[in-house]
Amino acid sequence: MRVKKFLAYSCLIILSILISNCKDRIEEELIDPTEQVSKSVSSCEGCHTNYTHLKEVHTPDPPVTGGGGCGGDAPHYEPYDRVYLSGTGYEAFKKNIHGKIPCIGCHNGVDNTDDKTKAHSGNFLKKPSLSSAEKCGTCHTDIYLGTKNSLHEQGWGQKSMVALRSGLPNIPNGFEQLSQAMKDGYKTNCGKCHATCGDCHIVRPNAGGGGLANGHQFVKSPDMRNVCVTCHVSRGGHAYFGQASGTQPDVHLTKKQFTCLSCHTKNEIHGDGKIYDQRYKMELLPKCENCHNNINTSNSYHSIHIKNLSCYTCHSQDYNNCGSCHIHGDGARIPSYQGYKIGMNPIPETKPFKFALLRRSLTAPDSWKEYGVANLANYNVKPNYKYTTPHNIIKWTSRTQVSSGKPCFDACHIMKNTDGSFKNKELYLFRSDLLDWEVASTQSISVDNKLPTSWGVK
Image (cartoon, one colour):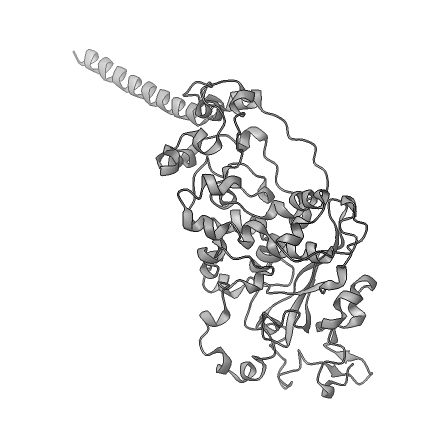
């Protein structure tokens, strides 16, 4: 009797182990993307949840031409990985209100077919938010009305520069008067970094490799590192995270753990429906004084300089610059470098300061030669150095902190050394700093003959 009970008990243990192992094996197999087949491939969802089938029918990417641009080369994802529906992200999407809409409700095309060509016919939309009026605006009307002319989506500041330097009127009409080759060049090179609704909320930005970021999940607040910094890398994230040698992360990150959305509100990012030819004109931009109360009188330095210097001229560290970019050609002929230049404020109609921090811009007179324009007709209409606001703020910089016994201005004012040279002169933009083709456009904002006479430098 005891033997029979023992054998029965042993069988139950063995059966339990077998069932457990079988369950684990089945779960492991379900995690394997090559086995996640639950619906017929004769449907949108069935095809895009079948990893093996996607690999069989995918179209290889065309050869890449030109460099990666100011953000570098994008990470590579295979075409089938970019459109594969799987994982917790896909599960979240299916539970979301957007997951209740049939695929063809947003993407158009033809459902219930295993013919890829037929499925992607019928005015198929790879990225529905490129037709945001119809596909997003019908539900998110207020957001669409703001976003349709936003800097984020339209890049009006860049378009303004291209139009004006081409000798055309300002945006929007001037940009539309460019040759088709120029407009195509803008779309291929500059426009690829400007975001549709989906670029922030569903897919990876093109600069991050493109494709679904997390199984088609709709994310209300974009992730700072994986979305915002993917595009705003060389002039935003690079500085904010203190990645350059000798720099520190921004104090708003280290002290407050701020994300982009802590300062840049969704209303600013979505836009207010107005067209701005320069991003600093945007009325909803964050301001230092929004958080820093009584900044004008908080200390003697502020009291003296607040009307003449932007906050960044004192509290920014060195930041990324580069320039003279060949659009669709060999890239920047002035490679990225860490620099720091104070000059005359180039946008006094927008910002009230006399002096401002400046950043060398990317463009050059021959930047568009690959698109049929040997030299821009009116390149000198705007300075080649621009007003800048680096995201690398710290309280004590090499300009605000001085050695014991030294005057408070020892690290920022220009002073004559005993050998006739000048200390701190490298902090300021002089005409002698400009390349030959930069002089005509930029000398008006150099500090030559505009500094205090007591400094003894012209």
